Image (tube, rainbow, N blue to C red; front, top):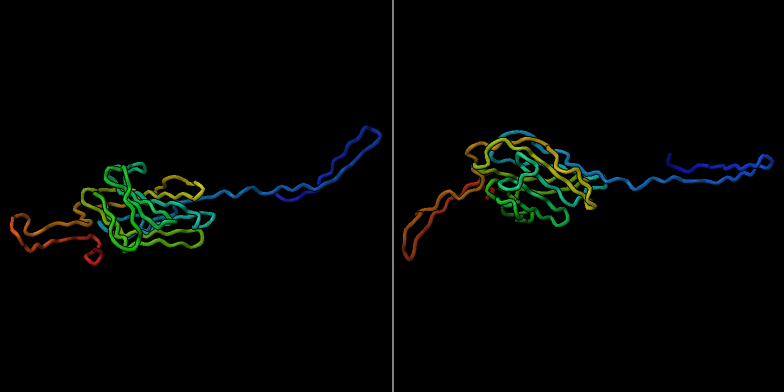
Length: 212
């Protein structure tokens, strides 16, 4: 067991016995870092737009978390044609995987929108906060019509030292058919010619026009 003990060693040749006593300490090793994707709120439902509170933990403290991620998909390993985001705690950047699943586009939380063909995240309505061992990533998400159907909410966390439990399934979300997401549906006139013209462009956001 851990701690300090008194140890006595005896040696005898049958006539003379010699004893020596000493102390020996058994120290605990380095504590294992345990990281986890704790929960998604909501963890079930249906909708084309929703704000998700994603909580992650690190036994060393939230400051030890390097990367946390979420993937709205039917498979934790899906890449092309999916909705996957990763948040780097140190830089504050939120990358979104492109449609081909080959590269990431990153932006800081606070303003603007990140979007691919499956989903969009309103950066101005999204945030990250830490408390003790927990980091909470709040993402204002909207989903596009081609991505309709039931999706799992896969979450991932990794510490600065590389500790991870891999992708963990933390819920289910259904994207309804006809989901609008963030779109630019019309421009008028849509065609023509001339040296000058007044154009009327219409934009839509599943989270509401105030989110644009």
